[in-house]
Length: 481
Image 1 (cartoon, rainbow, N blue to C red):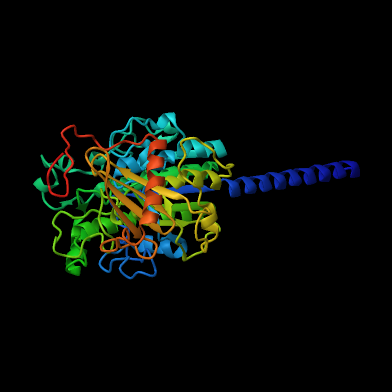
Image 2 (cartoon, helix red, strand yellow):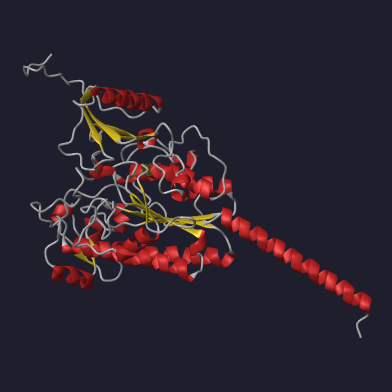
């Protein structure tokens, strides 16, 4: 028989144990709420309108009727689409450096090669671990060309290493001794086209491991598709060949590659749901730059692949930098639409805030957290007056651009480093720039934006156009001086 005193003692210990467990559970709930899982999906050479769902509900041409991307379509309908989402640059590696460090390409380098060493600066993994040291971070897929620092040196706990375009399938890695034009318009790989399946497998294993151990995680899945070369399975290609002529200048094989990419992204979504962590996980989706102007084997007389945007990859027209930009997660209204201009270098401060970190103040940080926009889709802008977005590619293309509010100024450079031309557009009213230059109607606004852009480029010691010592300026009569 248990003595009454012992029974009282046992009940007291039981109550104390229950209280402790409840307290631990409450604390863990709070930590979970403050430190959600974050997944960033980055595609390659993927245009703004190259989805089967409208990127802008007010513009019917902001999707394709030929392409099939049901999983990304579901992401849009269950989350928030940003109609004015931008990549930091119109080229892959500058964008990847920018996203990693929260910097504009003007600051951290506008081409493949740069003196910027990511490991010596703030990075996404470092920012997350500053908010909560428990975070585990992984990068799978394309790291970039000439990134200098390894993923691990930048704070990642797991990665595929210093991968680049060849890792994901370029002509030489597919048995062609030459460039894309020297091989067939597409390649068949029935096992692992564009390494999309195996990369997804590693991403899933990482998420499963972190969930099992109860650790908040950051996963960046940087897919090699839709970068050239075009690679797909024979089965999916057959489906698109049966669909007939594409509605734009891409090919059935290119469309097949995109559907296979979408299918694997869907496996990531399914894993998050099956692990029961959807309510504590944010999913971000975007591309490293706009779509290509031409596709191998595509009909050059057809509607351009990037329609309705002007320009394509490599340029600072909207076609080169406006990209799909979608977010799903806790407190985000399903099917919501935001017109707030955001850019890939905003991810770092946004992720830091979502992880529970205090406001970041860093001398090299160009990004701005858009958490407030995620919680309020009717927000018109993040700051008042509106902040500026900067784009810079002075060496290969001799272009720079700035967007402030509704307007975007694009300038081109002469070989002697002097501004050659100016174009002003209202890209909020319509993303289509061709034939809509407002420079003559609003010269004062253009001058104000140009001054702001040039001051910023000077501030960050941005690369300058290559000065040609033989450059001679032409006069209006065609003579030189």
